[in-house]
Amino acid sequence: MNKKDIVQINEFHIPRWKELPSVDLYLDQVVNFINSCLSSYIFFNTNNKKKENELLTKTMINNYVKNELIEAPIKKQYSKTHIAKLFVICVLKQVYSMQDIKTLIEIATKDSNIQIAYDKFCKLFEEALLCTYTRKDFIDKHSSSDNLYLLKSVLLSCSYKIYVQNVTNI
Image 1 (cartoon, rainbow, N blue to C red):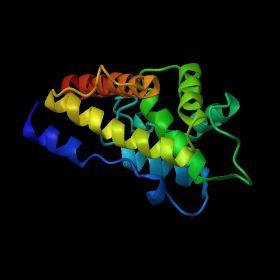
Image 2 (cartoon, rainbow, N blue to C red):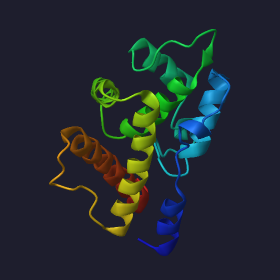
Image 3 (cartoon, rainbow, N blue to C red):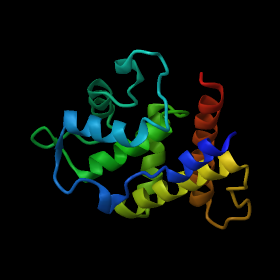
């Protein structure tokens, strides 16, 4: 791993709750916003055709609504809650099935509101990526919280997948 890759990962930032758009967005705007934030770091498909390289598409969002990973938009507009869940889905879909993602979101929001759970997810995912690229420990095996241990394990698995994709350019 070269210094450029580590610098790029150091700069990786998923917008926190307060940084998400304060107005509801239409489908095209959601796709553009999320792809612009994540596509430099996370590859869903590495074919050379731009359309196929998109991490998130309108069709994917419609499928997430149909499969109840996110709620249906209100008047064709997506709120901060929708956008936050879509960021989570984009990260987790690297490794997990839709049903697994749905379960993980339910676990994360069971005892916490969406804003706190989302910000924690973002912070820990950024840490997991950095630890993966710098070969440092991320998981405290003696954590008293089963949910925190689960979240860190999930995020570490996603980080490993992203690392492999970036290193091997698969």
